[in-house]
Length: 374
Image (cartoon, rainbow, N blue to C red; front, side, top):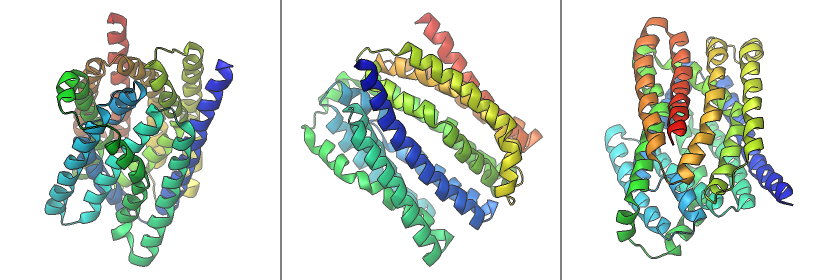
């Protein structure tokens, strides 16, 4: 019965993630056929800025909330409130700097989205998680393409931002569920702030690369790189699904050893497909993105350390120990910045692709070493 229940829960998360990712892929891949690499790169450049702003606003980071909600700790309502205030401040700052309200609105949307996901996963309401995931991506496709055709590429971020507000009801419910207890922040500050700074290093790993590529190689290369990231996201669906399933279970001391072994083996298969198959297919569909085939051929290798590290990550977080992943995040951030500046400048697109693999490999290596010590 336990195995059947586990498979059912994984299937629910999988259906949600696979369907949502498929809709997202259709949107991003279709958009890539309509715009130039420079325009595609600019969109992802501003998304990167909004993502960084939302991460700075997420004092109650998504995985922190998932753990606390899973353990039924009342502190999460307080974290919801603090994140809301911080996200409004981020909106104001982004508007002042860029004179565009769509970037700030997207940052708020990301915050609401993160809290909604954490609520559904922490309460292990996987059916609700699936429904909301599919609706959000569907709305993103509908809103964004409608705005694109009526108002042009300049307003497409507005459509993306609007789609995330589908989680507003969950966010408001979480906000009202418990009384605000700011004293609890002090009691739990070690885990909260360690995990917060961990997420900051993670955002350097996933977003700062986009900000560094523009001054070094330009928006066109960023467009090719961003398309490769979208493909890699599709390839990472299974590890992502398993992590979302494993984290709340690990928080309750339930370990699925066989499941982890099978997922790691499958990651090697995915990497092989990325290296051998994708480079021959991509030029057929994305002829304007001339460098994406070379980039994805190299970056596909990062799926292996990324998958392995997700299991270390869930173990450390379930123990409310964010300090160990933080060390890995610091090391990988240093590798990313140094690699982008040095390898990117010397070897161009190949350099940034190699840096991507080295970044996740260093993260996994640190996690492996620290797990042995633990």
